[in-house]
Length: 359
Ligand code: SF4
Image 1 (tube, rainbow, N blue to C red):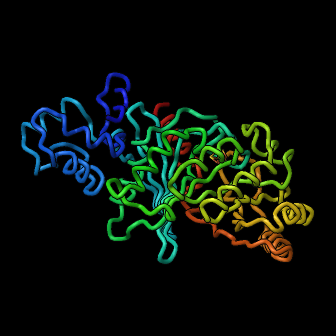
Image 2: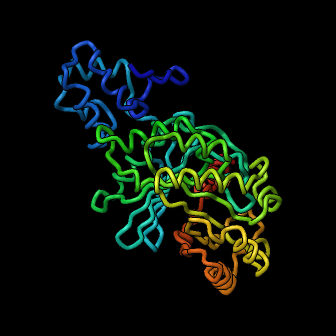
Image 3: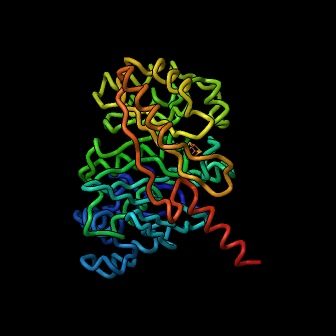
């Protein structure tokens, strides 16, 4: 039987924290029938029930019994932010008062959900609002799964097609909860999301990549490189620890050779930091011949961060120099700028609002 997550602060454990084995163990609840686990699982994961009262095909006594042992969810949607381009930011209040953000991004036929893995982030990339105050805590697997459930509920008419761990937090700093959530997302007895639709974006510590390589589920991995040298990365990402670019690239390549899953390399481009021709040539030297798609991401300005977005001409130059070296590239369009949904901004804004409301 899978371990039931311990109650937090005296609260009952949440059903969303269960893995597939954990749902099966619900058959041991007094009054349960053999089909009870499947019923409960469908209510929680397919139909988005947030309380036991909604589970109308379970008997009242069984619902009452389950409610003495479990809560359904850990968090509740606090508010949403809608951008003119269709991007939707979701802010969830967690049981300990922390705020969690997720972003739903439409792009033609694709509807991508950007998922957070932690409240805050210890990597503290200089361009990112999530890292400004360090990491607050890890999310549980249920808090990760609930982001998917709530994002689905917000726009049931447009199913999500892609799920990216690119929100607040470094997923490999919360490795076990992230992998547990991915297992539930991917399982036919969970959310049934194909592995190719799931991407884990990581700073790429070689040991973390080796751990990811042991996972059978062949989800995509994206490496946040941002700078072409170890010293540059250590300056831009002060919580990274020692950058080992060559070992990172080698470990990701090994996983690619085993799973066939394409590697994506992410480069957030900042004016005067990594947008010069010399930077572009250094990226080209690093990545020429490497089996990856480079995702060039012009930085979205963030309040309280004293950096500048790059000129479009610098993005063109970077792309041209990389392409000339045989490196495949794509440029990500900035999204949700009018409502400021870049990683970490919603939580900071909501915290600032509640602080000023209290003054
Ligand atoms: S960009 Fe990612 S790794 Fe860097 S501080 Fe933000 S959430 Fe953390």
